[in-house]
Amino acid sequence: MCPGLRKLGYTVEASKAKVDRIRRPVLFGEQGAERVAYEVDAVHDELGVIVEIEAGRGARGNAVYRDLIRASLLVDVK
Image 1 (cartoon, rainbow, N blue to C red):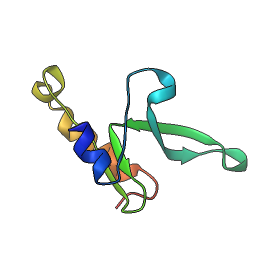
Image 2: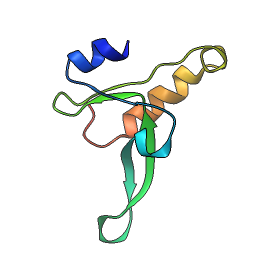
Image 3: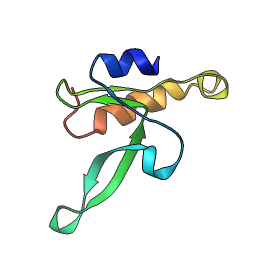
């Protein structure tokens, strides 16, 4: 999926290394500092779209419901 999403203009998580993760803010503290952020699998900032992919244990554990709630809290996501 990664090559196809990139071709469509998405930024895609390259690996699980901290530097390659995609963080999006949820809550801000003093001076606008990020207090809470979630990591997503892919994002298209211009469209305001995020992609979260679940497989295996995450899919069986109803992670989709958690992801829906988290997505609704993200800043600048439609």
